[in-house]
Image (cartoon, rainbow, N blue to C red; front, top):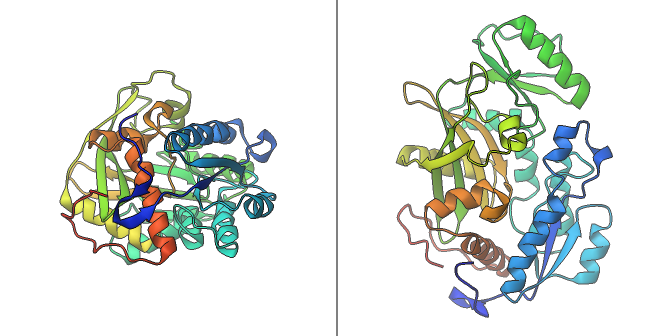
Length: 354
């Protein structure tokens, strides 16, 4: 592991002595499908890996599942702060926003987005509305609550169907892209009946895909990487569920640096208007004309070192930021905010030194 912590952070902030690591309480019967369960089955394991890092820093950590026992455990342990890694409650991602609600009531400092930020990220339709209102480009889209809803005549095929309240590429398969209304109706019928939630349908953007991470330190630093897919699945190329979760080839998806100041500014704006905090992730498609289209956003994206195949660690390491530094920034942000001290002014070229 590169780098280590001293007993205090710069700018006069002491390290926390006790940190809670909150993670999703995962049981198979919480999830409608095996695929949905698969995306979270390692939640406790990944939390333990992060706990091991904190132990090396001299921080005592406690693993706490995000369930109904959470208030009692927090009251008993009395952590100085918590890392909030909870992606779902009882298998429902939209309930994850209840976790910061509990933490706010108990006055426990925590990493990541608050109630509003998590609520927005778990509703792709609302996020797109906010993007539209703020000039952030996104494909034309429509929300379907029922399979009989008429298709907006302005939408142009091919169209891709996405679960409105579920992330992790669940049901993003080679069968997700429709070239006709008949196929679209079949897809809607399956998704709505199985997952019991609305479906977001948007125009599929043929072209490249970029993953963007924003990590707050002394400023809001954006890290961009083009996602390179080395295995073609069907007519359209994108990071399907199969490639991300089932394919055992570790090199099936790789990344290379992508730099563009305009896109970085879009990412900063998207981060702000969706009320994210500390860190966030956005997926952007780039068409043949070089136009950007924001297709997904995640507050509190999956956090873990490179050995867990976490995209945030993989991409930031390309820029010389290892997982130790990521944890350092998250902890410093939380300590600084909990003391009420203001962060330094945000500038594009400000140093990322902490």
